[in-house]
Image 1 (cartoon, rainbow, N blue to C red):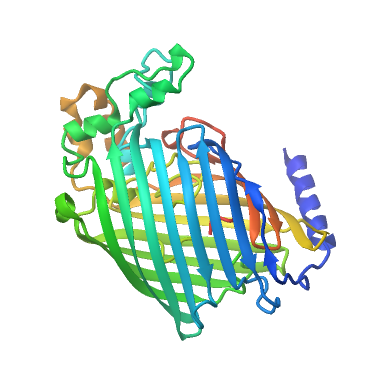
Image 2 (cartoon, rainbow, N blue to C red):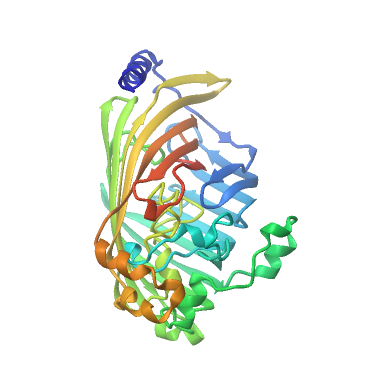
Amino acid sequence: MKKTLFLLLCIVCLSLASAQDTTKHIRTGWNFGVLPSVAFDADLGFQYGALTNIYYFGDGSTYPDYLHSFYAEAAYTTKHFGIFRTSYDSKYLIPNHRLSVDITYLPDQMCDFYGFNGYNSYYNLTYSDQNDPAYITRAFYKYRRDLFRFSADLQGEIKKPWYWNAGLGLLYFGVGPVNIDRLNKFTRDEEDYLPDTVTLFSQYVSLGFIKPSEATGGAHPYLHGGVTFDTRDRQQNPRRGIHADAFFTYYAGLESMSSFNNVKFNAAWRHYLPIIANRLTLAYRVGTQLNIAGESPFYLNTYLNQLYMQRVVYEGLGGANSVRGIMRNRILAPGVAFANIELRTQLFSFKVGKNLFYIGLNPFVDAGMVVQPYEDEIHLLNTANPILNDISPYAIDRGLYVPHFGGGCGLKVAMNDNFVLSVDWATAFDKQDNGKFSNLYIKMGYMF
């Protein structure tokens, strides 16, 4: 093992030393194309569809930053998660301002639900394992969640490197039990049919942990505003600098959701430290999301707020977009904190026609934890429910404010520093965070 690690280190060092200098490469005009939207996520399954990302660089004077970016994607996954998204981003449409507009619809027939407060909710793999005598249903830790999102965000300069941010939008969540009949229609093998039985979501609803007023979802228009400190050398794949922001988001509840008006606070610090110029960068991020006023429905607590959209979905916490290796939405609470650290390497770079490519590796460690729990001591109330009885001893022994850790390594293939194919392998450090040892995520771009 030591010899293997030493050999890998030698290869990385030689590659960093010998890679050609591509910092003078400049892209001009339009850069676009239609590509298959093919990806894989340990939580969502294999993704198939199509996407296009169109960049306009003008005369190249701002490269690698673009003048305008247009994005469109339509895809579906084998675990019944859909992606239908269009977005626009520019720092130049409105002089001295950044405008971002996003319209997205994300139907999810099998959304992950593992209970509240992280480790306070016990994860029993046998309930969803068809080969185990204790099997209940593959949908035991699932529910239906359809999300429609509209956002329009504007950023302006206060005095470099300080910027102000303001935006408005709408989040609509359609929530409910898994639609067993619909999923069974597309199941060929009778052994894989989902039984109509109890799930963790239905138990939370029946016990009152999820209120009737939030059990079916709702519409939440929002306003947010804050400040950003940005000294990065580039928007995409920065090599040096700091990108930090802090902002408040006010969510309103329409009609029957009027009791769910709330205010959330978000803060994040991202730091990029060059170790070898243009070849090796240490990148880390720490952040938090807190509910500081009013009551937030549980499904809003699965969503990480952003000042402007750069990804399809922002789940919190667990999974490809927050804490890799850990199950999606494993850490569900009104207030959470998270951290990520990566060592980003550029091993080889080369040109194909007018396009610049590079290949890199990035080992990483991610963490997340509850900092503002649900007030109900759920593990003390489970004695009335036979399905949930096994939570109590584990939750009491483990405690609440305990970090969840995951880690692994990623492979990056980039074109023109903007289009990045990311293949991340990760594992959870605790079996309570994932019943599988190996978790693979194939996505676009770096996580932060």
